Amino acid sequence: QVQLVESGGGSVQTGDSLRLSCEASGFRSDAYCMAWFRQAPGKGREGVAYISSDGQTRTTGFPKGRFTISQDNAKSTLTVYLEMNNLNTEDTGMYYCALALVPAARYCRAGYERSTDYNHWGQGTRVTVSA
Image (cartoon, rainbow, N blue to C red):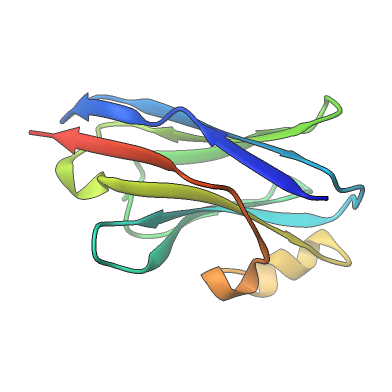
């Protein structure tokens, strides 16, 4: 059974940094797409950053170069990180990691930007940024 567990959220001040982690387990596929989504209060989930099993990454326009996604797949458990720098109040929300198992990593670059593209989700970790 696929399990995703996020951690690292918290309450910080404008300009601070946070690193979110997502531990993924329960699957054996070598090819996957993983992503971080943010859900601001009263809004839907929007993609923040994406990474595929071959290490290719993408970020959306919203973080404007402040966020970096990375992964550690050398261990038995896959961990995906989201490094968030220079946080501002607009970054406040719940952050979710998501996983899609695919036939090959190149599929991730052909799409997999919407929340509906992912069928495995973590419970989320809350980030609150105050002025």
